Image (cartoon, rainbow, N blue to C red; front, side):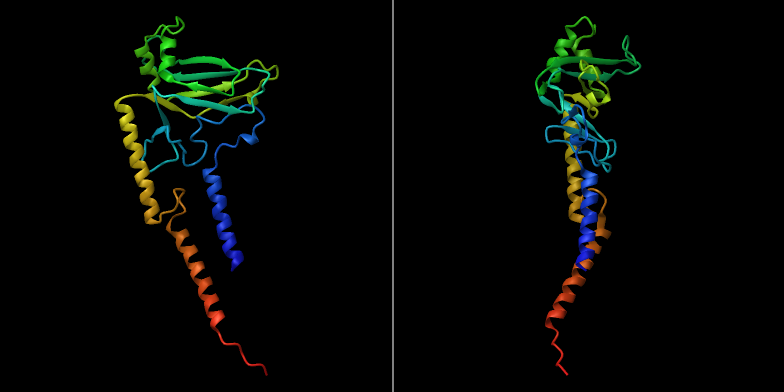
Length: 240
């Protein structure tokens, strides 16, 4: 019976760790983002300072991070080659209907030799608006970045042998402010409440284990401890 219980919990632990595993940078040879990656696992795992938007409140496996334009966020990575700078690129796709930039990808790039970079969207909007490269106002850039197709892309282009191992891309996000942030916060709170309700109802631990699993474990434990109690109270037979 002990072996059966160990098997049940072993399979459960394997399921949980596979379903909720964080991006494992140890498996990568080259540079690897350790932030701005929220949906590499299932369900998505957003840190406290990143709100989330889901098209379906019942499905936490997909979503977009929502950043507040006035806040600061650390872009971090590991396994970079210290002999070369890291290029950080913020890319966002512009809709087809936008004049001049329709269907194109706008990007802002900075190079650094530090181990992290402080990302503050609204400060970068000002810099982008003052650059003749974009020919857009700050308000226009804010509007474009409010879409859901923003990503952080890092690489080390100066490496002579630079290939895919020396670049990485984060999860999609949107940059918002004002009412949009309030709406995202409301949806985030609703999602958290639904998750708490699932716990109380015994529908699993957010990864679909559900009532059948809990009933099976409860039945096995009840059978085991009942058998042990009866065995310990049973009178020994007299020797013949």
